[in-house]
Amino acid sequence: MDIKAIRNKMHLSRSEDYFIKVLLQEITLSQIMTTAVVSIPVTQAFSQVVRLLNTHHIRHLPVIGADQRLVGLITQRDLFKNHPPKRLDNGEWYYDPDELDRLLLGRIMIPNPFTMQPHERLGDLITQMVARKYGCIPVVNPDGQLQGIITQYDILKMAAAIYLE
Image (cartoon, rainbow, N blue to C red; front, side, top):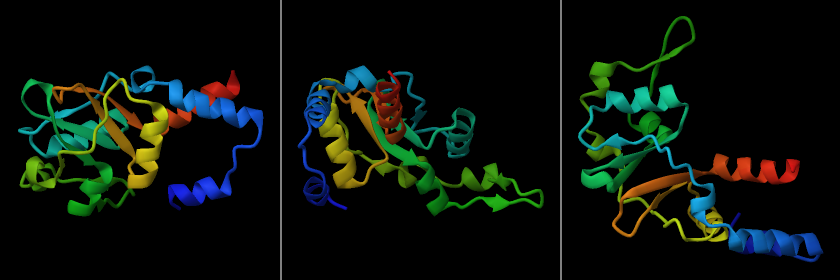
């Protein structure tokens, strides 16, 4: 469903809807982004992608180059697509580290992913995520250095916190 279809389906008619719109216009990405970002250097062995995703229970892993500059993004979906895990007899999923290390992170990652900056608005981020079907957007400073990341889960956590308040 595209943004126009959503807009036609939902009409801002109640006063509460107005406040939601104002909230989305006023919250900056710096207010909700995860700043303790787990990332991986582009030169790292590919088996470390699996280790980091599993250890930190995440699905999106920014890839950084020199000076913390964002050069790519690797997702759990990219991993599954390029090297699906094997299922062991006990039902657990397994990746052979030696097989993984034959892959080059720089060739599998999404190069130069779409980014936004900390001062930008939550409503603009959500619009981009919906339009582009993204699960996350890295947040960088004007020099391209990774400052944070915002995932769909971060937005849901914020909505839950507002609802429970």
